Length: 51
Image (tube, rainbow, N blue to C red):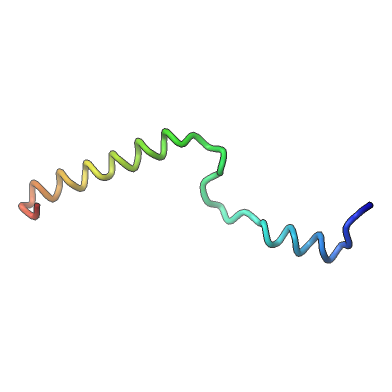
């Protein structure tokens, strides 16, 4: 049993990857990078007297 070729192409197109982060990647790296960015922005704002 095989799917109709047009249906198979439509299904593949609907679930195409867009080049974003992989769903199964290391989440800890994303969290560390995000919190590092938060700390750097807070330090910059403090040094400039904006906070």
